[in-house]
Length: 246
Image (cartoon, rainbow, N blue to C red; front, side, top):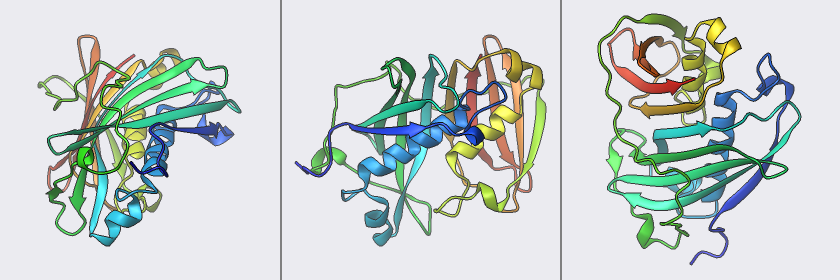
């Protein structure tokens, strides 16, 4: 067992003025960025760190993600993000998260599935955390959810357009996962964002976007959920799809 890596990593974050919405509460994309940062930190002292994979010409990518929002922290609140590995399922590395307030109120629960891909070819690489010395909490499930491919149906849609800019790109030279969440939220009418609270978000990340790409985010209402599809305009490649409840 790698004693330098704790079974569960706990990190504290404080919410700044630029990380909250007009109601003074944390945006969903910001909370996702805290979780992504915590995942990176947990793997940092292992063979699955950013630097270790980079030497092998590989990188982690978030493939599937589901979060349930119970309550939202406010500007200047300190929150604690906990994360742990649940091992692997086929080619996916599984990781869960929970966010608590400083008084231990549960704010967000989340589960995720990750892939390791080749940096040059984007081909999926085989991983097996269960046979490494990385600590695994196989039976510690934050949510009773199995992440599957989201299915969309054809309905009337509203569209939101975004040109990928330098500020959207992360250290892996593609759009950061949290930016897609920001675009998804921006695709909703202002009245929805001002009057309702997001209760759950499920998202599949399917392909990469880079600087200069024009992305069309189409949103449709299907029963109790809204479905969002992000497509690169010049070649029609689907970048991600999401399912949102308010």
